[in-house]
Picture 1 (cartoon, rainbow, N blue to C red):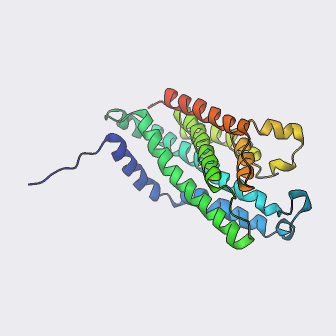
Picture 2: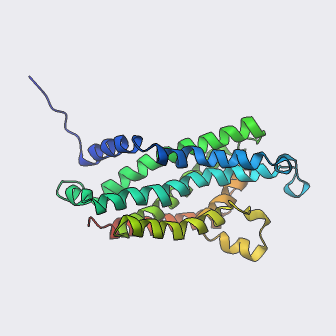
Picture 3: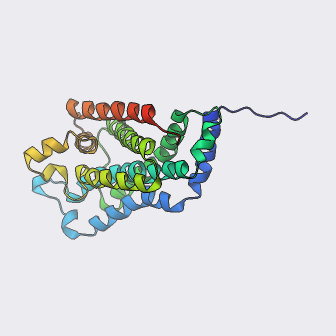
Length: 252
């Protein structure tokens, strides 16, 4: 007698989306490998490896480990995921999904899980290379660091989810994603670490999800408690944008 395993629509969608994602090596490169490659390029600058009195004896490259960790989340959330879902919408894949028992929240959840795994792999690789190649210490509060990182990932995925839900086409998705992408890179400190910005600009950046995340990660890495305001900022962006993403997601 033949038996057929019954899976929920969400589980089936997750399996299907995971298989499709594995066929996209370019996306995996930008999410998993590119942040660590950037870390290595910056670490090749001799002065970035020298201890700095202004940083309490830390080398500049130590500031870039949490930044490159967040870069994985930015690449996945603002570039990869919206492009995938917008292409689905443009090619009527979402229209076909809409005729099944699947719900809009389930495709968002599947994409968040898949990209979340890629972000985690990219973050672990960046931390490992920082430790082994450049001698950057592991976070002194690893549990707090992990909790802040996961919250930052959720905030970025929520941002990408809202773009994915509203963009009517792949071109629109790319345009909106790019508009949000570069400010996110700046607020994460990719070009200039937040700690060296003027105080007023630092306060403004701290109100953005990636600015708050970097400052909270820096505190956790040093063994200090992250500022409550940084955690509240991350929660507010995650809940607000995540709720909007689920509310306004369009099949067509």
